[in-house]
Amino acid sequence: MSADKPELDEDALLAGLVGPGTPDPSTLVIFGASGDLSRRKLLPALYALAVNGLLPDAFAVLGVGRKAISNEAFQAEMRSAVEEHTRLPFDEATWEGLASGMRYIAAELEDEAAGGPVTDALRALEAEHGTQGNRVFYLAIPPAAMENVVGSVATWRPTGGWRRLIVEKPFGHDLASARQLNAFILERFSEDEVYRIDHYLGKETVQNLAVLRFANGIFEPVWNRQFIDHVQITVAESIGIGSRAAFYEETGATRDIFQNHLLQLLALTAMEPAADFTADAVRNEKVKVFKSLERPASDEVVRGQYGPGVVEGVETIAYRDEEAVAQDSTTETYFAAELHIDNWRWAGTPFFVRCGKRLARRETTIAIQFKNVPHLPFALDSDDDVRPNVLLIHIQPDEGVSMTLNAKVPGHGVTIRTVNMDFAYGGSFRADLPEAYERLILDCMLGDAILFTRADEVEEQWTLVDAIRASWTETGSADPVAYDAGSWGPSEAEDLMQREGRAWRRD
Ligand SMILES: NC(=O)c1ccc[n+]([C@@H]2O[C@H](COP(=O)([O-])OP(=O)(O)OC[C@H]3O[C@@H](n4cnc5c(N)ncnc54)[C@H](OP(=O)(O)O)[C@@H]3O)[C@@H](O)[C@H]2O)c1
Image 1: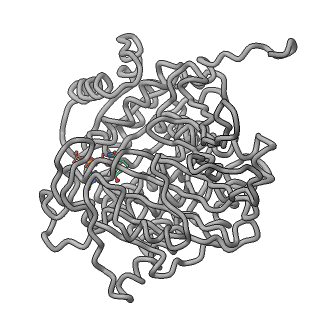
Image 2: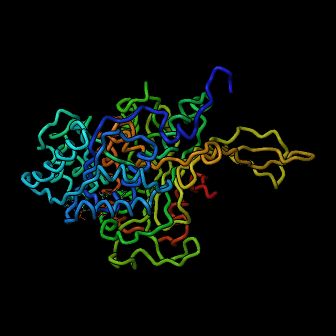
Image 3: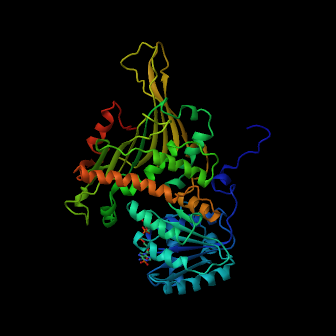
């Protein structure tokens, strides 16, 4: 550490205590407050922000749901949700502070008049807690309820403070519905007021991708088609669909994961350096990537559906045997594609992407595989293991970055082995990583939209997905191919790589 630099307080930095400051006084209105997302993610995130002193002193939460429960019952429910899901030890005093500004109101919001009792409750809460009319509306509700709630909230009298709208995924189910929802929202709110969530963007390693690329001199010169053979992006889940059959039957892997998380990871990997790290500059660059994506040919896409198998030592049933799934369902639980970005940086360097359920293990990674050396001057043994360098960005479950290098095994002669150079967040920094929702809620309260998707981004993502889905009908390849649960997907996905002499990574 050089003498003129103060020592970094990592715990404070990771907790967010050293950062952009505390948000304005504000009220968070959660629509769908009794739902799963609210219980598992939003309330624990608010609690963590409270523990770390990141919420403003004047802060309140108004939960809105359809079932009629009292404030006390709501607070008790939220307390048990926090106790169950918090990543931090439960602290009574912090909870009491947060709960003192927490109220609940039941409302359907199907017409304008239904908003009356909600705004009355909101104004009373604002007056009590001095939140100055600044409002974040969090739409943790099913997609079908979005327009009603947005329409109602938009009519609420201005308060002199700011208002912001957080919209949960999925944002539409195709281009037409996404456009319609964008149009509906943007007639009532300005783009600056809209925060479309893709919670992957709140993950620490995803944000680190930009730092890795643009704050290290060694990567950018080689981050292109001349040095990179291909890129692999994997979003693998070991779980099945659980009790979400109704949702999943309508959605499938392509719309559930590829349209949003996978394409966002691809855009962050492929984008040009932005002029500055501001929301519009970064989003402009991501949109350029989406616009440069070629539509994959039908033989560059694989869709699969899991059969029975063994996942992490446990026997599991086929997708079609899951409760509430049709025996002839053609919903894909796996999707893989070879994508090409038609620009100077990436022409000729394919991006292979895959996502799926009931795969061998839970893993989200971006693997940048560099080209092989042009010539090896060593007399190689059959024992030698010389592989191309891979920069592997681990997004979950263990966040970090590793690089494979070829190294000489100690001893006489030259025997080569591939070794890993690892940076694990857990090993390099002391504190626990914040959950994505902590960062995203805080950023919205601070008015920073850099980790949220803009209207045109969402529409570009759907444009590609719609084209892929349309080709399945056109080519008659509507039926997904089968794969064993617990495997890495269908053999057709292996073929996709093998025909060009490549392979999906395994380790
Ligand atoms: N759960 C997750 O991990 C997760 C992850 C990513 C995105 N999301 C998204 O987050 C949203 C909520 O998901 P969830 O899992 O929390 O769903 P959920 O458990 O079914 O909860 C839905 C919530 O919305 C309310 N609601 C349902 N229909 C409504 C309507 N017509 N008008 C107003 N409110 C209505 C429900 O209130 P009542 O119970 O009082 O009826 C409930 O509080 C969805 O858009 C989902 O796609 C969830």
